[in-house]
Image 1 (cartoon, rainbow, N blue to C red):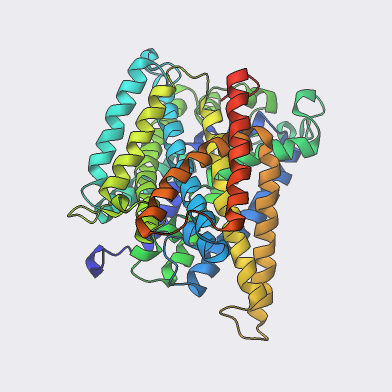
Image 2: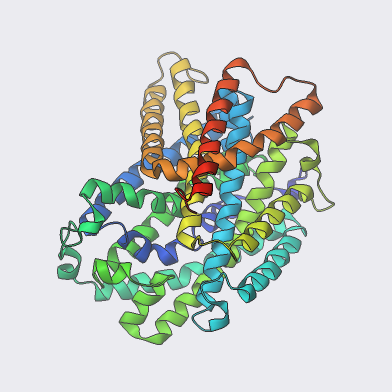
Length: 475
């Protein structure tokens, strides 16, 4: 990828950010949010999300500009600030979050097709899993043809999937009724929602999932034609997606009541449009979702392989993961990623887990990489590294990074103990890859304080394993 011809331009980077964030989440957003919050709490929750995620977007922009030597984003920032094991853990968690999201996308795609073909059911029937597997390996061999070629196809699917979303927003805006939105604004008529604070907290993991991908350009910083484009792509992509998400969610609450939205089958956007215009609305959204998911599957296949490749180049992952084919695609990283997706697709045949459970777990896994990126930005400002002594920019960046860090900590609280324990169960086995990489370099596995961190992760993982065995925890 050293040749200029293989570099990614600004439009490709923006498409990777937008394509990664707009997957299946936005099409299920009306039901996913309404199941946890009424209109008033939704506005508060989106306010918190907008501020927190914008701060995080600025953090990625700042780090891309001030630390241009740190390629591959979330992994590199955690390692630079907090050592090898935390860097590895960020890469490992990010990677698992990415392919878990893809498993959820496959389930949602064939659940949507089940609207037309009952044999697909809720996306986890044998026929659905068989077809999902064929699609998985089709995407796999497409990506093997080349990163830039796959990125170009992603640009086309990104444009194609935005069209039905914009059409939905226009139709819903015309049909919006303020009295429906303000009816039971705080959810007092639905005691199962809990207090307003509970509603805001419970919707947080959904909002995190729909924004996963905000760091997509940072992951590809080493392949960008211009380093300055990385930060631009992050902020431009975020602002565009934020507008679409908020409009879809808020307008839906002015078309159907919260209980009606909460009872819809996913993709719930299809149910809302069907309510407004009839069956053709559901068909339009289903087609848009299919295009969107295909583009998102492609984006995340690229991102999954890239994060393993970049980490192995820095000798924090085993060396076999940095092998590239003639098209400059990290071939072994791609095979490992898609093999894990295949395994989990098979698991969905016997698991009671749903699309929602998968996206919650994927969201929980991404929280640690986001937390360490924000913390590293705070650390740079405190140290004054890359800043002049009396720089006003330093104070501004410190405030933004502090907001992003507080938001990341709030998300950990919002995730709750269940998903944090399940996350630990997936984090713990990563030490085997870390140990192999360290052995290849002839280095000791842990520093003293890293032993304590791993011990805490292992204890949480054992607790999660016992919880699953005893039935106290479920997927």
